[in-house]
Length: 549
View 1 (cartoon, one colour):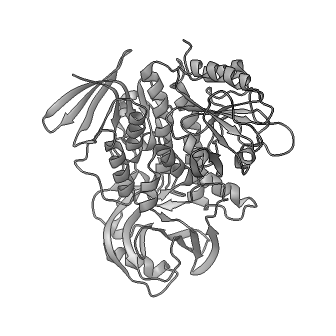
View 2 (tube, one colour):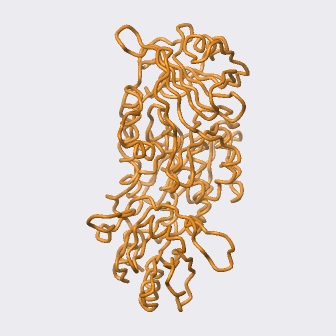
View 3 (tube, helix red, strand yellow):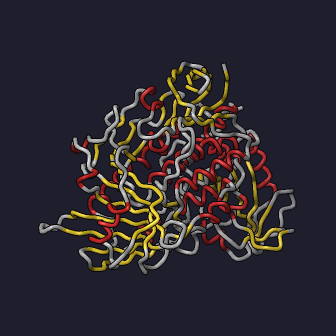
């Protein structure tokens, strides 16, 4: 019987992220998928800025930038008349913008990235059963040569809305289905609308209800879009809201049966396109699909974990699904790595559900609301709306891993990120031997926690030394430590890697106080702020994650 640390079930973007991050953290794993070959469908298309930041930490972002196209905004049309135009413009402190990338390209990039760690997807391999005990998990895999038994310490179910891992764990997946049926098509059109803008065109009936809709998301290529629209009667399936559901009653995702033809898509364009006449061509693929909204009651059952669609499904509004799943996997992988090493606390793995299920609940609720009412565009705080859609406002302030006693500054004035919030990037840092400006993310790409000391001219070296030694011991050495020097600060006498905040970008982004320290997790969230930092305070924060001794 093969014995491994972690078995990942499902090789979509979520499973591939989980496997790649486990390997980056030095954990052995296998990743299996029942499909003999990847699907060449542009299902999930939108890539959020926060996902780009995680790909930056993984070392994958350059490949993604080479393949993706910018999502510049959305053009709205109602009953043939133009509505408000949404421009997806983020402040310059955000390193990446909104992007469009076909899911099959995302999967190829992640597969190649994973292969760089010596791990390949085992295709045509299906999970048949899974059973856990106090010491591990026994999984039976169906392969071309027959059943194969595997013994794993943990299993991650990234096997979609009909997850066998979720069913084996006995978890509930509660929610409902939308009655509408839709179709997707990957086509080219010859209109003159601006590049990089999505299109949403609607028609209202006499009572003001939307009775026809066309949504177009740009893809790489001239005039190429992934279009979604209501299914015509001749392609509709019977059975109401549950029609098209699988044996488990979950009606979600692409369906078999008759695929839409180019004429079906052209008919919708003839009704709703903001430019007439318009001609659709080069149909690459098409499908009908249904939408449900469901959330699992726990992301963990013992040694079984769920991520992505196995844990939460919802409307595709705002391109939240795949991105949320990728962040599930990223959050879980570093915690499993510490558990496998034996350096994590007893409750470390429970923090996965504590942190990520509230995020899933918020995303499900928001996307259902937006699917029914539309994304609000008349808010007075468009920046907050865009940051939320970009998933930059996701945080874990109530996490058991966050040190609440060492928070951000109180009172008026800029506060910067608090414990549990995203650690922002900043530019313009200076480093000896590097004749170019350095980004803070350059220091955070290691797979370990990072402790940052912001040192001014009056911070004693002995104080930093004492805190560093204590922190390294508490983290079992799994910690990177840097000094971020104020413009007038001398270089530390004690050997400590350092960068100089000559342009003040770090001080501005973090609203720093003299001598303050910041503990950043491997997933780019603050575990604590310390002012002044003390060995006891830093060690207490680390012991929320790392076991003693």
